[in-house]
Image (cartoon, rainbow, N blue to C red; front, side, top):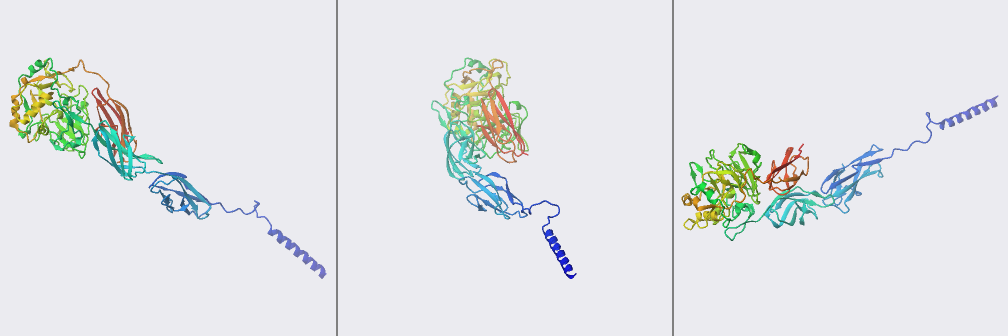
Length: 608
């Protein structure tokens, strides 16, 4: 019995061991099969995946790490932790700074390496480009037509940079990262945009600075003539300033043509009969008469004079819109008590070589001006205003061109025709006039622009040296009728140096001592010439939307224009482009004018 019991215990123990062994290899509840899965794989992604960065500039990169809770990375540039000065540096936060110069090759790799797994990396391909140049100055800013050399200063110039002249490349010498020298040739007077272009990789250009090219202007006094300074920068500034030999307009402009040998008009006696035997009266001098200055004043300003708004009160449709560089204290004809006369204001800008003229001029408290009309004249050109248009003068002529000025008399020679008024005029004009203001139906009344000449046999030797200069000019260049007024009044600028008693001796010369030079075509309403107004082929902006204060280049292509105006901000201009700096959304208007009319086109620059 005891053996049987022992045998039974052994069987029970064996079954227990088998059960325990089976339990040790039992599959987990829920099934699924296989072994325990491996841990997740660590990955790194860099954003942006590619970038173009200009030298000296920066780019921020971000790294996205997955597969681990440890998202820290080490940044490398071309395998170098943190980078170096050759390929650029990168901070622990992923802020990359490009090197000061483009390396060779100009492509580098920015890489993020995971701290959790050194084999986990992500990269971005970076292309390094040359910087965008900036231009600060061009010297000289004004020079005569022909060959020239300019020095351009600014920043971010690189070897291979090119100075552009109106968009065309000049022969350029790289001096340093802040200076270039360039040479070229320009035969045509005008305003030209100068900029700098850095080469590839990443070719880019600076903003534009405008320079002025002037043309040679020659006078033909007597039989000799000669070349006079043409750069308006030679003109002094201030009221009644000396032009220092500068002769407004081109040598072939009608104001500047010597007509000493020109034929006498076939109706000279008829025209002179209407004038009668009036004596010459110099309508200028020193001091005051009845509290007003004597003559038509002018003032010369420079680039420091800001352009101001001109509001037209009578002839706006025949006026050249501003802005114009008219000082708030510009002298008005008749100052200090201009009264209700013509109130002419004449301004020369010696930085741009434009002449601005207004009549019935009224200064406003905000620095702007009201005027019946205004005209702008290119002192380097041979401008003809649109036919039938007036100017600040009834004949549509520039007033300044015909003034007798003390500085030129003191030099010993006047090389242009003199402005004169006559009492009667008919509905007709001759070149260079463009407008009539008829007050007579007499066929022998003068057409505007008629030219009188002191007869060659008139003996001037008994007159003072001052008066001989004036009389000689009347023999060689004559007098051009510019407005209705008292007969034989010749115009000049007031100056304290005039000797009024001496000037009055000119009254011994009368209309009987004059003759009318052959007029050429007399234009009336029946024979006005017809022609095409200017064509504006394009008017574009370098950027349609900019941050306030950002320079923008306006560019244009025109044909057939005598002169150009960009409004607002700029005014009269030359060349094919100009730089503006809008502070608010602005619509710019290009105005092209010739003797047959005016054409306009607009472009808008948005400033959000």
